[in-house]
Image (cartoon, rainbow, N blue to C red; front, side, top):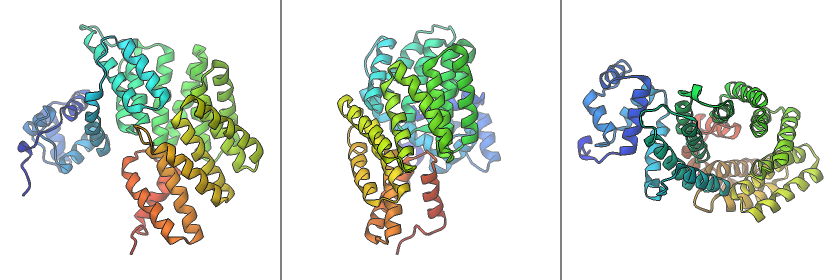
Length: 396
């Protein structure tokens, strides 16, 4: 028997999120009720009030209506509830700067759940200290950091929403911080598949960084433009932007970003037949990640090798490097679902090409399992989705 909604304990976090969406649009409870009715839904204002207080969960149909009203994905509601599990691990810092510092270190180590908890605590402390004054640069910096952590956790819609919260007080931000916010939006939109908008934002961020003399921001923007060119198949342009970004990061001593860029360039070289030069860069990367303990960068490097050797048609090396990448991406506190999906995708493709039905079924099963956890839209994700849509995903 279906349990009435009023008898189910709800989610306080989801309630806060719904209230923030509603007030962000300037809607009253009754206005949401009217919009729900127009869209064919049925949510009265008393129901929405209970949802916002965390007294009960909305049904899936009601979440679908609310997602349409507030222009967010249904996945974002699920993500909000997932983050509730981090409440107990939230640090007890009373100093927001200390929380931000610890969060940055957790990001560096690839512990994105811990990083998120630290950044959320920093936002909480800074908001409570405003005392009626408006948002400022410190709060903007904390919210940007929180958005980056959400992005790393694969919660793209929530990350985008956090960035839009920052843009509401953009007049209070320095040019440097505003540049980073726009660049992070570009990264989100690129992963959601809107490469045209992402490219415009990345190039705008590049102009802003150069105007402000922000070398690190310039390098990050160059990386963003290069990544979009890479995904569009413009490899010469991508390599040029990657090299410029890498040069600046090396000058600034930013090893974290340099490792990602070096893997991207090395993969391009290997795919184009410059295997010796490409592997030299990859080996250097893997050695540095091993010494520094950068698990995400190491897994990324192995996956770029998977992609490069898939383009070369070397299936044995695809399998070899996919195993190495999986071992890293699937271990630790946070699983890197995007990397695991890419590895499974290329194993699936070579199994199909080789007519290996057993391996094809195994890889296909992994893809089906991982796909619901991804908001990211890449060529690989789109290809798999198209396969499913055609009905070929049904196995006898």
